[in-house]
Image 1 (tube, rainbow, N blue to C red):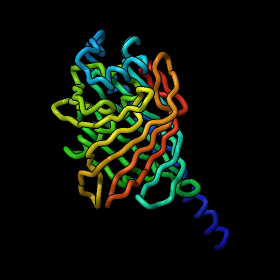
Image 2 (cartoon, helix red, strand yellow):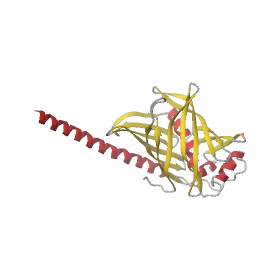
Image 3 (cartoon, rainbow, N blue to C red):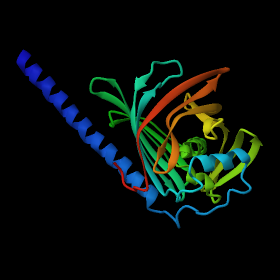
Image 4 (cartoon, rainbow, N blue to C red):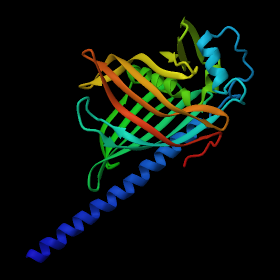
Length: 280
């Protein structure tokens, strides 16, 4: 009986392992499919040749020093990152790995991240903004759905993320079909991104080198299943040149809750490629 029980347990464990492997592959294929869908409905492509005249002073300087004013417009982006993530505001930091894909016409993204919580067990998340509509899907081992969130608040949250992450392909900041800038002072400006009848706004602050050093917005945060508009903050660090553009390699983002800044993600990018409209 003991050996029979052991064999049964091994068979069950093997079956579960096979199920998780199959579901993991399906999750990866889903992300790849959604990335391709981002690029499929592309229009005429990113607007080219927009004059810098009329842009706020710090934005004008940024687009010059970043190389965006001289480089041909980026049409698509794919990247891989490592870093750490904190699921709870006061919880422990855990390693994370992710991939992200961007389109520019219309602007959109698909992001996929994975953290391991125990041997053989991981949490996967897929965040997306397509046509202005946002969706967050979170699963355990790519098999059990923990959250699948959409709606107006998710739309705004995903668009705000997209707008902030345009610092990785700053030629998009020149596309007045989707972006509008307004001046604030000598070191900051407000950007509004509009896609599919929806919009999000972010304030960018620029450092002495002319590059974005931080950004801030009011963004919806999930609190017990309800969207709560919360101050959202980010810092851009370690700029390097990639294919003619200066982009940040490290970014930290967090929430300001009860007067305290609570960072929850620290990305470090390992690979950024422009104009390769294909998943990894």
